[in-house]
Amino acid sequence: MYKLSKRSLRKLEGVDERLVKVVKRAIEITKQDFSVICGLRTIEEQRRLLAEGKTQTLESNHLNGKAVDLAAYDNGICWDINNYFEIYEAMREAAIELDVRIRGGLYWLAPANSTKASAEELMNIYIDTRKSQGRKPFVDAVHFEIF
Image (cartoon, rainbow, N blue to C red; front, side, top):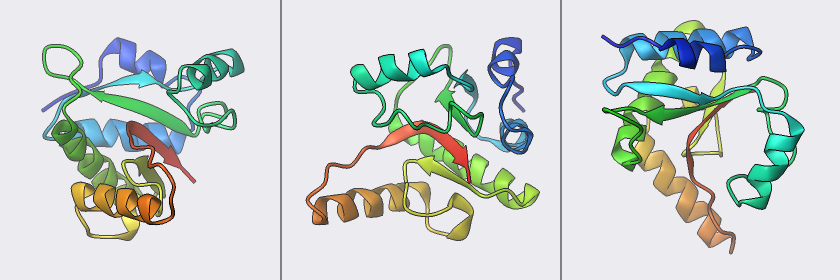
């Protein structure tokens, strides 16, 4: 139903081919259109994002091509978390189909393809776990990485 734009395809340049295949398959099966907003990053970009509080590390998988950020799209970028649950489910389904281990920033604790819990349930488990540890959760709904 959906397809990646030329801009999104350019953002995938330099990204690990396994992750590119997952993203391309996910756009074919998703119920929520999305755009690739970030693939490979420079260290300068990563430093800027850290300074802005948009990342928590300088050791991001964006630096080695093993991560992408996907934004929900509906006549422009939209940030409603419910749209990101749909993207997460499509990425998980594509990863299972292609036998690629991924995890998403909704849930940092385990591979997306290791559980049948919904994206929303996983996010809530992550948030509760971090809070029980006295740590602040960092929900990064746009982020997906292979490992």
